[in-house]
Length: 267
Image (cartoon, rainbow, N blue to C red; front, side):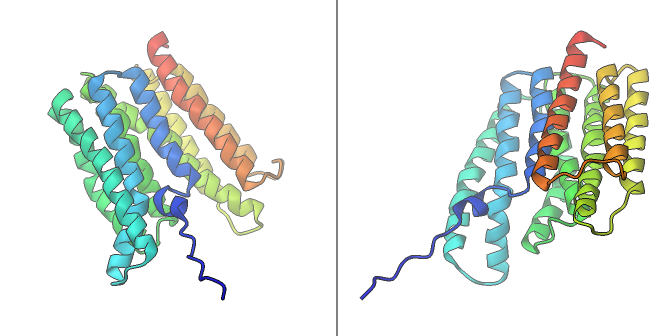
């Protein structure tokens, strides 16, 4: 008699975000913020941010199964990693409270309702809708403002960094969604991503004029606008989703670097 084989539990898909763009939402503001505003408090803020980011995926399964009043093998895995990632986030929170000014955590308080909404959407399997995706970008981009405030920067500069990061993330979300639909031969919007890039470019240029953004970042915003116009045109090169994702990582790293380099070179 053949022994019964245990069903293999897809631990990775339960514990780690499957959307590659989500990692960019986390790492771009975090990397730029850590370079501009390093310190012990910044380290714990980073730990808090990573832990909170990681807990979302297993929490989605845990809350979803709880709402359905069911207990599956994946529920056990999800519960275990919620505790692990929750411990990481708690460690970061305690360290942040010890080594960073309390007011620096205000942006996290501001986005807390957004986070609650995203958890509800996660449990309902609505995370790939446009609104949750954009709100996730808003929530994760707040990290750079927290880091700046923790380092003692003025509120104007700190919140301007949040706007600068969103000027990259929000238009890029719209562009990638439209580009993927275009490559699949589906209906897509050309005007919305291009308009969003234009608004982002104007916003970054305005912040640059008031000396709270870098010329390098404004140039990157211009490059991203050109990328959106060309990438959604008939002159584009047909690309697979993976290649589009790789290019977005390159753009994201370049944009975050422009913020940090521009700050230190004062350009």
